[in-house]
Length: 48
Length: 259
Image 1: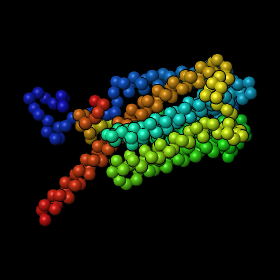
Image 2: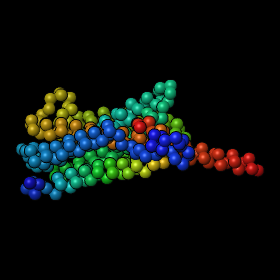
Image 3: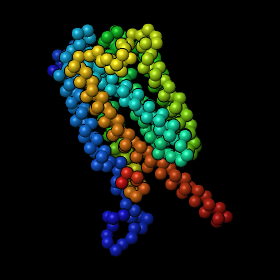
Image 4: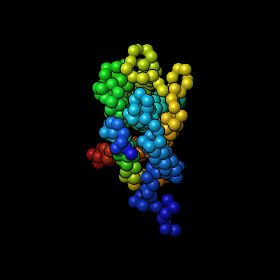
C-alpha cells in the first residue's frame, strides 16, 4: 500500500523516525526503571 | 516486606526491592496507547485519502500535529507544575519532578515535530528549512527547553535545581502563544492551524479529521504513560542521590571521629 504513495520515502522515513524514537525512549525508560527499582526498597516507592 | 519467610524480620540486606516503575494503571495506559497507535497507523496510511492539493504528503500531518500537541501539553504541564512548586508553601519536589519530566518529553516531541516538519517542508515547499516565523519560533522553543534541561543538571541541591528550573519553566511557556500565532502575526509559509484556528471551525474532511483525533488520543495516552514512568524514575534517582550524600557525610563524620 505504502509503496504506491507519492513521495513514499519521505512519508515512511517520518513514520519510522517518529515511532523508532518513541520506542527507544519507552524501552530506555522501562529499563532504567527496572534497574533503579532493584536499588530502592519497595516501601519507599510511592506508587507501590 | 511481605515476601520474607514467616517468623523472620527483614535485615538491611533483605529489604524488598523488586518493583519497577510499572503498575496495573501504567500497563493499562500502555496497552491503550499501543492500540490507539495501531489505529492511527491504519487511518493515517490506509483509510485516509490523499489531499487534493498536497497529495499523499498530507499523511505527515497525522504525526506532525500530535507531536506538537504533546509538546504544547508538556510545556503547559511543566509551567503549571513549576508554579505549584514555587507558589505553594510545601515546595514539594514532586511538582519539580513533574515539571522536569514533562519538559523532557516536550523537548523530544518538539524535536520530532521539527524533523517531520522539515521532511514535509521538502515535499511541499521544496526545501527542508526556511527561516520562516513558525519554524524559527519552534526552533527557539526547542533551544529554550534544551536550556531548561541543562539548568536542571547544574550542581546544587534538589531544591536549588527546582527553583532555578521553575523560573525558566514559567518563562519558557510564554513562547507557546508566539509559536502558535506566529503564522498570523507574521507572513508565513506555514499553513494556519488546522483545528485550533481562531474561528474554531475545523476546515478538514471527515475521515482526515477523525484520523487527527485518533492521533491526538494516541499521543496523549503515550504522554501520560511516559510521564508516569519518568516521574517515578526521577523519584528513585533523587532518593539514591540523597542516600549517596548521606553516606558520604556519615563517612566524613566517622573519619573526623577517628581523628
